Amino acid sequence: MRAIRVSQFGGPEVLKLEEVPTPTPGPGQVLVHVRAAGVNPYDTAMRAGTYAVKPPLPYTPGSDAAGVVESVGPGVTKVKPGDRVYTARTLSGAYAEYTLAQEDQVQPLPDNIEFAQGAGIWVPYATAYHAIYQVAQAHASETLLIHGASGGVGTAALQIARAMGLVIFGTAGTEPGLELIKREGANHVFNHTKAGYEEEILKATGGKGVDIILEMLANVNLPKDLKLLAINGRVIVIGNRGETTINPRELMMRRGSIRAFTLWSLTEQETKEIYAGLNAGLSTGILHPVVAEEIPLAEAARAHKEILEPGSVGKIVLIP
Ligand code: NAP
Image 1 (cartoon, protein in one colour):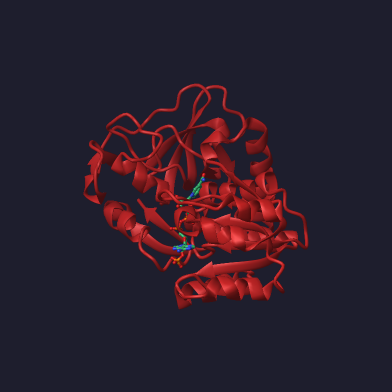
Image 2: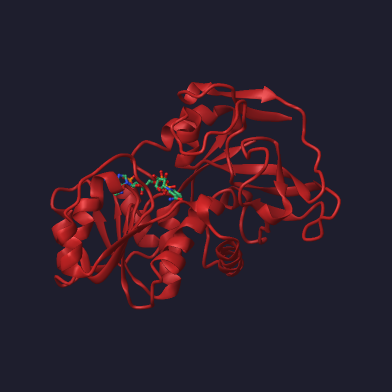
């Protein structure tokens, strides 16, 4: 089968399309014929060798795939060949024609969700769900600022928050991004490249501030976020690309808190709840991943460059 392989850490050019043996599922494993693979920002850091998790070389990147079950190993009971599925992590990497996963890493893909959309489920939607329900413990009618709402996690968060009855403030950096986030449910939209947009957000809350902030770029925004919080407000750090300095007094004055997580640390119970919540939302169409661009698998390097550029409008996916 064809797969993208990384044999040394480095720039996008280290992503090479190679011919490798198709894996055979062992006990409790499932082989998925991949129709689309999701590209996530962490894939680029892992490829560069700067991510907290360093895979042994060579490896195939990617955790999010959607496709059809090709074959199953002994003891697998939840899926059978021919089932449409999406993956929530894999054993052999998603940027390939086939990927091997453990049975509990494979979830049903409802008929109303296309394969390209299915490749945009796990990392973005699990992150948004975990942040809103399990970390922020949001309640209907609370105000939520999605600071970076036009990308994979942001659009997922918009759809989840809209279904929950939160009042949503969203930011994007371009006109197409602003249009997208309005369409996906933001009640108030702001351009994070425009000088003074923070004051506009505060004004739109009547000066009270927001209850919850989902932060996609903490090294740039965390100090400003603290000034946008309501009493008992909480900032949930999702994305970060460096260091920053905050004034803790801003938190003290607002009884505020900052919480942060990575998806790698989900507990078994949290994962079970996320699967159930996402699968219900996907099958009813409330959750519907937004695909920005489909790129051939051979051009994975281009996808890794584009995902780090400004102007997000949903997910970039690779088509084997
Ligand atoms: P993405 O699809 O590339 O989207 C990036 C988002 O950040 C876009 O909405 C972009 O808006 C926005 N952004 C750019 N500059 C910004 C600024 N100055 N202020 C606020 N937002 C800004 O990425 P993603 O998949 O949504 O992931 C977002 C971040 O979360 C990434 O850093 C990713 O690594 C991280 N993440 C963390 C976890 C975790 O477990 N903690 C899980 C998933 C993702 P424009 O393009 O419109 O400017």
